Amino acid sequence: MTMSNQSSASPLYAVIDLGSNSFHMLIARLIANGVQTVDKVKRKVRLASGLNENNELSEEAMARGLECLSFFAERLQDIEAENIRIVATATLRIATNAEEFIRRAELVLGKKVIVLTGEQEAQAIYLGVAHTSEGNVRRMVLDIGGASTEIAIGGEFDLDKAISLDIGCVTYKQKFFSDNLLNESNFEHAINQAKSVLAKEKAAFLNLGWQMTLGGSGTMQAIAEVLMTRNLPAVITADILYELKGLLIECGDIDTIEIEGLLTERKPVIASGLSILIALFESFNISFMQLSSGALREGLLYEMLPDMRQMNIRNRTINSLCERFHIDLEHANRVQKQALSLYQNHASQWQLDNSNIAQLLSASCALHEAGLLLSYKYQAQHGAYILKHADLPGFDQTERQLIVSLVQFQKADIDADSLANLAIVNNQQSIRLVIIMRLAIILCRRRRDDVLPEYQSEISANSITLSFSQEWLTHHPLLADELMQENKHLAALGYQLIIN
Image (cartoon, rainbow, N blue to C red; front, side):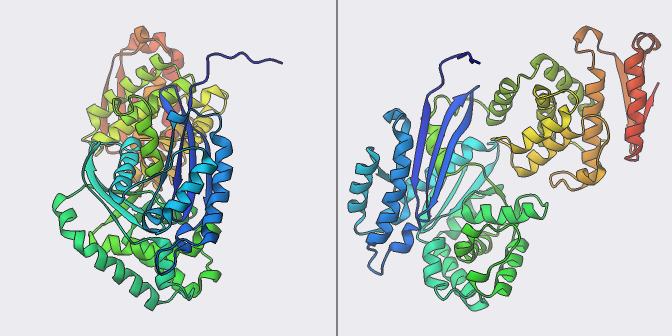
């Protein structure tokens, strides 16, 4: 059996990040105007733990790092040199013998290694978030690394302030949790020390102001994984941080940590990282933080790729998925138009009047047939699975959950309990959005613009009335029957569909 080569493959791009805790390699390519991750490799090198009191990097730590880079070098052989970025961060800024390690690393990799300044690292992290998040709000970006913490504020791709501070989860573990004990005293010392460092920058950041806080480092990801194990959205609050601190103190010792959802590899530095995050929340009066899908590596990658700042990130994501899953664009636009017409007519009365919610409804309509590529019978389930696990730059975890639910319940039975667990909308709002999308899909069932019905719609708190001409109903008995059948599904949710 042979396979045809439809077109020459797009070139590969690679980013390697020599971090203080882990070394990472990201390999990606452009496909359908979107970024497709081809490979990711991560190794816990814990380079920062090899620094002595004189900031000299031990031979043992250097050996761990060089062994990891020898693995990475294998993957770089077939990638053009101009498509590779290799950077080092805090530990190699601090180490007095960093030049020796860099020299040996370049021999192993056969490529140039750039040691980023703290400000350059913070800028790249911010750009990684900007390239993978919706950009119409001012955002604070936080990243807790092994030996440093980066903080940045800006809007879209315009950066107002970016700094790097010498507080990290590996170095703080050595300073405040070297005895491996998880007690109130160790936590208090770590939090207070981090707050004293942050105090020098507090006023400047508070004066700039922001609407959203995002973070994507290992500490934030570890907490998000714990939340998702509980079937909660990956939204980090101060209460969650204090609860996790209490759970860790109950464990007593780093070697005996047992928290559901916390991966083994994250346990050694979770207490120190959590202490820094608590200090950040308290210093900057942060109410909640969302997980970002991009950081340093994505910032370096997207800046290498052509025209990545030109298209709205959500449009790029939707267009890429539509192309990859062979979605019928004309029909997707048809369903979008019907859904948004119903939405705009009744958003205020149904308490849905929110521009972001409208965008998420539109995205759900655009992608509702993604599962057809696999099969018709289970298209809704396939589509929901695809969107639950696909990269969706521009949509955060709570937004993704809503899109997945709308696609999953586009037809047949509706799981009211599942809709009740969404974080971005309340239970009534989620049900109403599902109703709007389902009706739009039914009304567009013939997949032709010239047979779309003209109708009037009216709503009350728990009902929606659609009025058609008798002639249209007579000539479309199947659609009329489908609308009548839909009333049975909506009745299970406490809503009534009336057809006049």
